[in-house]
Image (cartoon, rainbow, N blue to C red; front, top):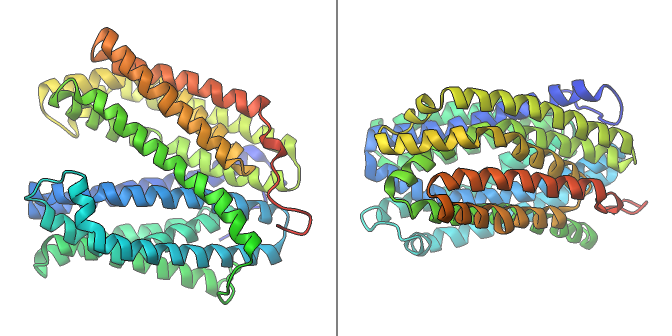
Length: 447
């Protein structure tokens, strides 16, 4: 349960020991979703799995916003940790708790009553609507737990502890795997059982994280109180653009899917399978991005710019090594990897060719994650939002559509890969020449 002070010590060793537990946590969260789908699909059938899938789209959108808010949490608290400002650290933890509690309750109530309208807006098939509504409403009831255990994990990372969150994420995964069949089949609760298993697992993980934090005094909790205006203002200035970053990404991927869909169902299936591989491939880059956000935040707070630059360099080199190895594996085993998800020959052929063509462009995508993580550590959330907008709406979507219109379905991979390269150049240009180093989150008095 050790908390790291990243303002001193061996940067390379710290990067490895801090990012690896984050990667493991991310893998556990991916397995959580996989296990959930596995039980529902096998015990309840395709219709129920479809209902879960469409409901999960809504939940993912909410989770994306939570991830954005957590990026703001990571930046603000890591800078206060770097300054060793315990008093303001307590005050901002309190402010985040109050705001996130209000936000989760508000979203929970709104989501519960608007669930059916949201699903119909998404053109959910009529046969799936009743089950999807029920599943979504139950998840909205437990949204406080989803907010809670994600928030606690982020606070730990901001304070330099990436190992403890593995415990309660593991607990959530194991509980969900056990409760899913119990609630679905043994208690005959159907799709509602899957939803209740999710919120019970997340609730238990949240309570466990809370108890551990308080018992061992790992997080500076205080009795909740109304936060100061300046604290709320800073959190919103950081949190809103950070949350919108994920919205821009989700909308951009939906636009790209429309290009893929123009080639028919086999392309959608093949691309969907390829995207599942993508979600695994980018986990190391996401872990590095989270790690450098916290590490850079602590050092920026005390103006240790040499260490910030060294963190960026080591993370970029580590990203290059990991992503090239991953790309080589995917290139050699593309067909086998795609067949893990689909069996249709035409879809497999499309997905296999796509991942082979795009695989060696992934180091450039990883570089984006690393450099944006460093910039977020300074609190330049709006600037990262602009970079994400450029990446998806100025480059990735238009280039994918242009290449697809020019050379056909193979153009999708060319467009995506080309956008990765140009996006990384934009990220590097802003990292090298931008004014993010001038960003000041706090005055000498704290905020």
